[in-house]
Image 1 (cartoon, rainbow, N blue to C red):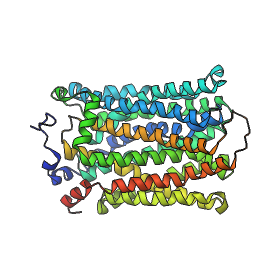
Image 2 (cartoon, helix red, strand yellow):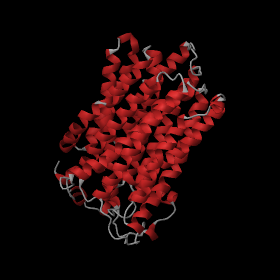
Image 3 (spheres, one colour):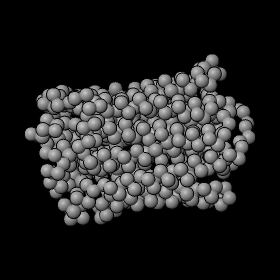
Image 4 (cartoon, rainbow, N blue to C red):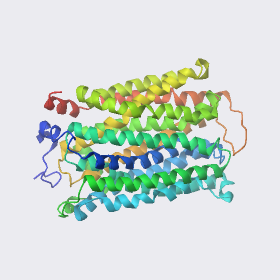
Length: 472
């Protein structure tokens, strides 16, 4: 008995790395079920992309909300997620212990689409008052994030719940990453096209309705995939008594599991960086390239490479290991971000090529950390019906925090530079300081954040132990 957790699982340094690494390589996982599971990520891709890409721009350039208030309207709801996601993770573990699956919570999360539409469906009297519009968006963002957490946390617990090994977990998540990329591409390419140049709230509502339908359809497909991958065992209830308060579990998993703690710290910086880039894309395209419609092109260049490079990253990781590949992605992402500082002076080719570099790296930045989380959980607890949801809740809370911190940091840069907000249809001339803030906030700031992520990730040691155990 592990006195620290009350479970039968040994402490991390008592685990045999070979046992963790060699439980299976995923070839035994039925491909049809794996594809259905992965398809659930298409809807998730839309939701993680569209608010991050357009919500800040929607607030400042359609509703006339000042950058500092717009940043707060996005930051505060995400701060709620810091508590919400671990709670959902704990609830997910209880559901699996009592009912044998996490499906009930997963299905509840399929109610996300109406809340997503409400984010942009700001009534006229509310839209006429910037502070009221900010409050409307913030309130519905809390609701939408809660429903997204209900889906995301149990969904991402699936690879850890499965009986598969080091490369098997990467294989499962590589399928998920490819489909997630499709969802991000659909959301990132269609949303700017459907919303136009932000000239009316109505265009945004149409965009949200179309993508909301897309989201809910694929969410339900994903529920079926989870059901097929994890046939429900007989509920035992044995894990219920081990579950303390959600925040106590957060403290416990971070305190006891050093590899997970390092991975979480790194991914907080990675998530902050990628979401900052998403938030800055419309501003960079409009004000630095003088091409507002180029947001779709840059978004496609940022996301589309993952469709081709995710399988390549998976194959490379079988030789190099996940850690080396992840460090490579972080280094090249920082370099690509700095290259974007050339702006329109270098023509359009250089920004597109630099964005393609970011996209190739983005695929690995999503694939490897997510596939390393189950490694840390198995190495620490080794109990698939125990506290998987607690770990996943902490992880998704970290991702949500980065999703809030990125746009907030960019909005802070805009505010410091004196960026002038505008209502739909208004034309505002930005100052030289605002243009400097738009450019440096989109290039130098993400490069510095990713360099910090690389420094933190270099402290991760578990991958070396697992690859040595496999003879990689």
